[in-house]
Image 1 (cartoon, one colour):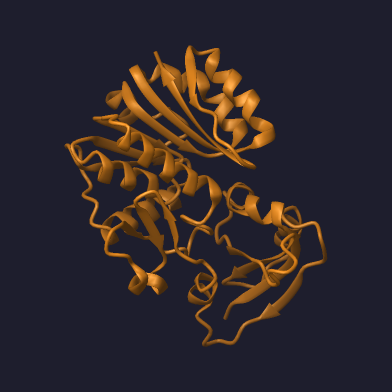
Image 2: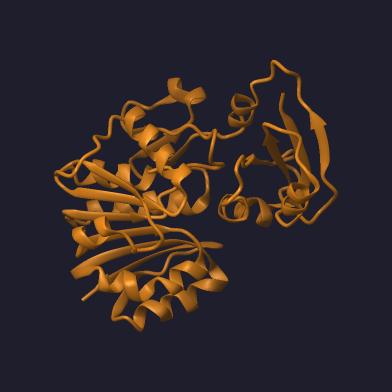
Length: 297
């Protein structure tokens, strides 16, 4: 038995659902799958949020969803017993292409181009994997860094979510060591499953990925691996600012930092926090969702 809650929302709210939804349901024992869709292309600002639950959601859960979508009251419906609601939710998650990367759910495996680096990410436990503008922007930024001749040997992906950005870094720099962490143990478990699906080896050596549950940079594995020459963090503006000192302290000279999860209106404050730690901006990003590339000189 599964349940679906539907709310009308704006395009701006839809674009924030991935990050804000994860934050709202971070401690929830059975979080919903969140999917945003554009019902009518002729009305580009009118979107719709669907939340799929494996149980009948309570009042508290409905009130949390109302924080994500301000346009109307939630509509609750019970799905048929034989409805595969995860597959149904994934049907709206179209593949994306960012630089040389192509990211898709299992439903779109047959659409893989022959000339791309392909990743299959099951969206059953995390909405918008590879779909959200910040993830796409991070993939494109990593692709540009490699094309510009940058080489990295020690990579950290903080707040990894599904492991995707760490996977991409290892594809670009196959001789690097990488570690991916998240504050949510479910995300770490999902990343391990995705690594298996995408044939990313788990381990301590070159070309291999370590996974750990960590709050920011507070973990013995992170401390042992530092200093990093590439650090990626696609989280939220608030944590990015708070983590600026510990991120900077974990970097090698000439290191690169890729930051995302922040709105255009938040970029100036995030940049200031890292400039105060001695980093300089290489790319300030563009659009509503910024992806910042900074360097430690």
